[in-house]
Amino acid sequence: MSLLEVRKLHVTYGAGARAVPAVRGVDLSVAAGQKLGVAGESGCGKSTLALALLRLLPASARLTGEILLDGEDVLTMKWGRLRAVRWAGASIVFQGAMHSLNAVHRIGEQIAEPILLHHRTTPAEAKKRVAGLLQQVGLPAARADAYPHELSGGQRQRVMIAMALACDPRLIVADEPTTALDVMIQAQILRLIEQLVAEQDISLLMISHDLAVLAETCDRLAVMYAGRVVEEGPARAVYDAARHPYGQALSAAFPRIGDPLSRRSPRGLAGDPPDPSDLPGGCTFHPRCPVALDACAEDDQVLAGAGHRAACVHAARSQS
Image (cartoon, rainbow, N blue to C red; front, side, top):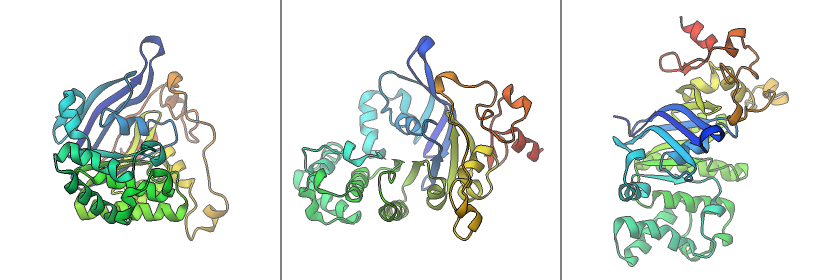
């Protein structure tokens, strides 16, 4: 059984004529100890998916489908059970550490809070645990007395990772954890996440717009477009030999080391993602697709293939 199983997940904001679909029928699974990356442009539904996994969306969001964490459906959990699952069963690392940390509390107090709540330990034991967590993420234990504004961006992100590890969760959801960091610090944080996940046998669901980062970090990749997964498979296969035109465009947007052509003229993708409140008919990617057929405007596609799947008429034909 997968540690995390997402089945036919739909997330809609608003209701009635103003309903806006943000996630449309997503199916995903993460096995114990596995690292799954979710990629796509801004507005494709990645962050909504991440927040939905622990029911952190606003009241205006309507969720249907199933989110099975260790076999329990998060969407039907009572509030007490959901509160117990957050932090201890699964935790989340948000992309903006400065916005996620409380500016008027020392970081040691903020890391200790979930420990005291879920482990019901003494303040002295929680303080000792905080010191160990800070050292684990490469920060001196003395930084527990610092306020968030006294730390650099990379240090604050390390604090967020320490908080995510505080209650020994089996799954960590990392929502663009390195977006606001410079390249050198980004590499350090990614190595730290990989090391901690491997050492503690934690499952990881990492969200990013950067396909290259996910290909280096994760075992499998899922590419989202307009609220749907349009390609899914082994990380290197999706990055090096994408089968969906959108996956190919994401991969080609990053220069390759040792490839002068891609370095001098990286390819992008014309146009913008569609407005979720006004999605085109048929395949939602067809208005931007360089290889779209007339039928693509009428007929949508489902994920097809074994191991490496894509929701594209050309991928379906190559499999037949």
